[in-house]
Image (tube, rainbow, N blue to C red):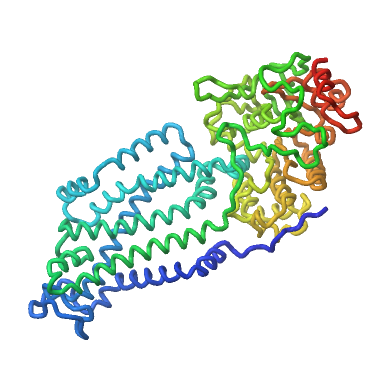
Length: 618
């Protein structure tokens, strides 16, 4: 069966977003009003009929007329001219404040949310401290010390407003960093900087724009308020200063309040509406995606894998007779714990992964795992949900969450140790020398970027290829993995592909940089039976063509029999048996392995509760 796109390729992202924004009438009106205000303020030297500070005592408090369209104030100054020039002050004030708040709050929020650890704690403490300070008192001190200049005042306000943007950015990044497509980007070899600016910044733009529009409006209100209270420069035309003068003559000329008041209100309202409209146009295309569990384990479906036999042990479903707690049952351990063949491509010895519980105790999810993979060999890693299969894989890849602790006697790839390396050093291995094919393909593709963009970037980064070379190679890979129209697929977004096509795209991306080791974690879980068989055949063919070593994480013994050369059986974080596939099927040594094999109903009489327990206990 051939998968085809379920929708035609979308137009370019900027055009699509512009079209979505154009469909929002409130956004168009707000943008038009704001553009008019900005244009009038910037061009005030050309549009203003008079000098804003020109005092004509003979023309005080005149009503609107052809000479003075908005009248004059108590000093005989033209109100229209002062409104136009005052807009410059408000726009400058808002620009300085929002630029300062973004420069201080957003980068720190990105770093704190993405890397966490010590910087997160320190930055959060400083943010809380700034939020607790009395802003008015600090502004009075600054104005008293540095004068009523616009820049010092608004920079101070920007610093005091930065915790708002910091907390927003940090909270969004913390959620986004758990997305599976972030793990996929790491496995492809992209650096943390590239991941942050390519995948994470695009997510925070929407909420950040909304908040920035509020902060910009707040800057206009606060600056106007300071001018109203007399903390500004009296020679500087401003909307707040005009309001202050108007209130002094409120009984003789109440209409003087309307112009500056309307200017402030309309500007702030337009900013807020425009920010929300732009955020809607940016964020509407992002679909919810699967995330890692915060407990340190990866997301599992909890449902039978498509194509699994009726008796195949399913993820998240304890089998009768299966020990759920404690150590594995007694049996013959056929793994050579503590030593692996020196000529193996991948050597893992005594791997241990632990998580610290709320009571301070360490909980080991992988305990002393030892395994190896030769070039051109497929190792099946089998066990029930929670047995430690995925944790072992992510430990090898260096993708465990920060709260996990990893230790091992040895983890080497091609003779080079992976232990003790920094994240930057591990990026040299990931994507280039070892790759990863995840389950849930739709969740591992970033919905904000086209398929072509997500395939080309890793190749340009890892292989140093030009855009044209990477594009040609991507077309060839998509054709090789069975995509009927590579050009159309390259221009498509993840939501426009079927599950089978998305999985093929991930496989193409995994092998795009010619890895030596491929780790496939339940690669057929979300696919139907026919597509599952096609994907397994494709994986096997690519593995043989490129002579890769491969670890296939699965709970389906049918998949193991079809594609694997050797199999390692895990129970409660321990590899209890590791042997060639034919030998293990013919004569399983460990009781847990016999129980897993006995759970298959194909060509076997129906099981009973007592029958399974007798098999396990035998």
